[in-house]
Amino acid sequence: MEQNPMEVLLREAPDVAQAFDDLVDVFRTGDWTDAKTKQLLNIAIQTAQRNPRGVFFHAGMARDAGARRREVVGAVVMNLHLSGLASVLDCLPAAVQGYERESGRI
Image (cartoon, rainbow, N blue to C red; front, side):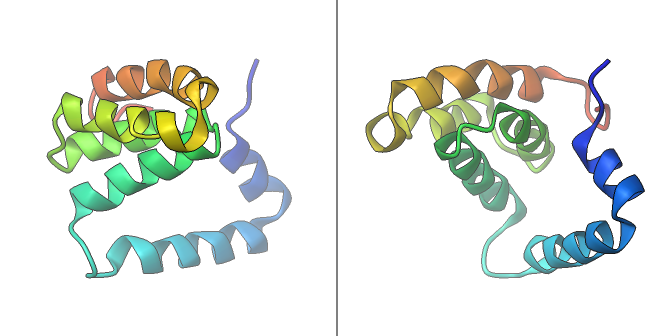
């Protein structure tokens, strides 16, 4: 059974996990852009880093922040010329699945 990596981090290094959460909160609450745009940026960055798990979770958060499915798909596909086809193909299914999952369910 696959474990949630963040749960493992919390269990094995709770001080590091808390420090990471504090850092993420700074970005989450920053007012430089709206919540939807922050999530779309996260999807694009996670795609560039070939991280389908991150794309999955941020796609649902983007939807919850008001992003349309086309915007989520676009955040992945725009990496085609920047990161290559492999990144897009690795992450596009995760984006669609994350967008379609029930709100609030992980």
